[in-house]
Length: 325
Image (cartoon, rainbow, N blue to C red; front, side, top):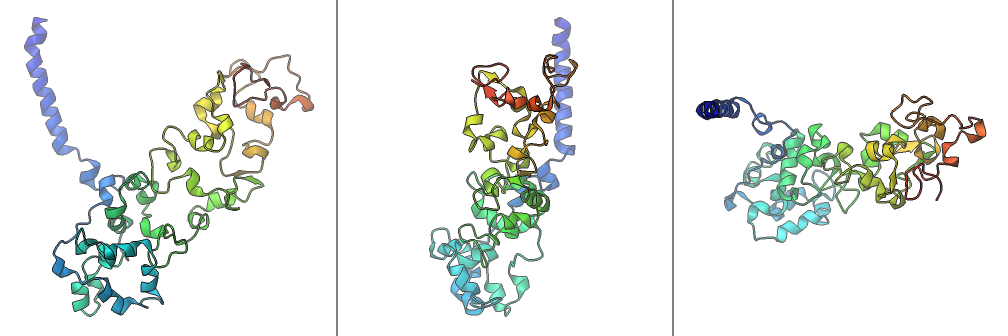
């Protein structure tokens, strides 16, 4: 013990030196400017000098029908137009200049596009920073900085259009699911299969299950704990908890047996026959992790569907082998 007391100050000194070294040498995501950092998308600093701003009516004098017909009229019909009437925060938060920046130099330069922010030829991070300056708050957009979209250079204006929206509520460029299909071609194909969630029919939306603005789970699922909670919003009878849980469901989740978008098999199953799906875990031998199939089971074709007997395969409150209650 005495030896430890003598050496302890030296140990503390070594640890302190190491921490100082790491603090100086090892860069963080913020210092490297990696797109995965939530702070990366928020770097727009609004000039506060009121003399730099001209107001939306001045913008309208040139942009009423430019660059396209009804350009300013479409803006007046959008939710953003309400900012023209908000004088509490100052000119930098009002109207067109709330997004495009101060317009005096642009006007004095005879419409010089280099003197105004046009959202063209900039990165998704830089364009989205303008949007997130207002829209970063609340659960919906709080994680956009770490989202798969922004990390792949897909920003706000790739999906939203303040001036030419085809879906007025969220200013979407296209309605769902066509907007999502523009990039997610494989998913589009999955929804054409015989058995599918009714997204194309308009009964289910992509954003019912996914948050396009990011999240903490794989595939940006709209869930707080596991992806399965998204499924349980509709399939409440499968949620449990049950006295006897099916371990495959608890460990791997719904996608251990089902494909979420579409399948050629009934009930969106991954395999064409139920027994083939069960045998992936329940081997004919005792070497498998899951209980093996008993030797007394008949393997005649008419008995091969495991769910003829094991009906409650999602979990049961009465049978540890998931027989019908």
